[in-house]
Structure formats: C-alpha cells, structure tokens
Amino acid sequence: MSDRDAEFGEYLESRAVVMRRTAYLLCGGDWHRAEDLVQTTLTKIYVAWSRLRRDGSVDAYSRKIMVRAAIDESRRAYRRREAVVGDVPETSSPPAGGVEDAVDVRRALARLPAGQRAVVVLRYWEDLSVAETAEALGKSEGTIKSQAAKGLAALRALLAEPASDERAEAGES
Image (cartoon, rainbow, N blue to C red; front, side, top):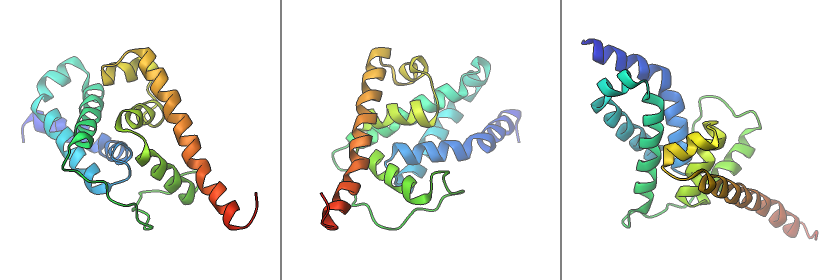
C-alpha cells in the first residue's frame, strides 16, 4: 500500500461516521442516497488527495463536494421523493433529545428545499460559521444568514404541525 493510500485510509477512518451522518441529513433521511453521496464525495477526495493534503483543506473540500452533490442530485428530474415510512433508520447511538425528537427533526429537514437544508446542516450540524458556510456553498454571507433564518423558521413551523394535529384529534383547541 502506498503512503498516499495509507494517508487516505487514515482520513477515511477518522471522518467516515461524521460524513455519513452529514450525508444522511443532506439527503433528507435516506440512508441509501446518503451512502451514494458519501461514495461520490470520497471518490472526488481520492482523485484530488495529493493537492488536498498539501493544502490542508480536506474537510472544507469534502463538505463542499458533498453539499454540491446533494443539491445537484435533488434537482434531477428523474428522482422522485419517496414517502417517509414509520420505521426509524439504524443509528450508531441515540440522539441526546430522544429518538422521537430526532425522527421529527429529520422528517422536517427532509421537507426543506435542498439549499436551505444544506445551510442548516452545515451551520448547525457541522457547526460551521457563517463565513465558512458561505465559502463551502459559494454564496454570500448575507444569503447564508437569510437561508439559515428561513430554514430555522420553516423547521419550527414543521415541528409545530404534529402538535397542533394531535390537539385537534383530541378535541382540544
């Protein structure tokens, strides 16, 4: 095994779980699409590995590639959205807020437009700054702030919907 392959393998081992989870969120909760997205990202990272290691920009490049690929894939006309099912996907560890809360958030994230979802995931899941998110997406900081605010507002509205539906079913107002 060459040094290049060994370095790439070490990087993969250290980042695979985070990349997979980020891809899952970017893909609106579809593990199969997330796996495809990670593979696409890893292929592009491997091709550019020598330059990336020299520049020290592997994580930034991988985020940019992953987000762009997720947005491009969501725009394809032949893709049809699948209905969300009641089965919870496998996770490596239960989220801190509880499984039901995490499932609700993932479903709400899946309903956001791809661009807003990318901003929300990078800002609040990857914990990037506004400037880092803007650089990763090739957008202005103002656009990132606007999309983050709109995305969070949409998430709040979407997460409030089930509660109002449950009250209506119980005969409350």
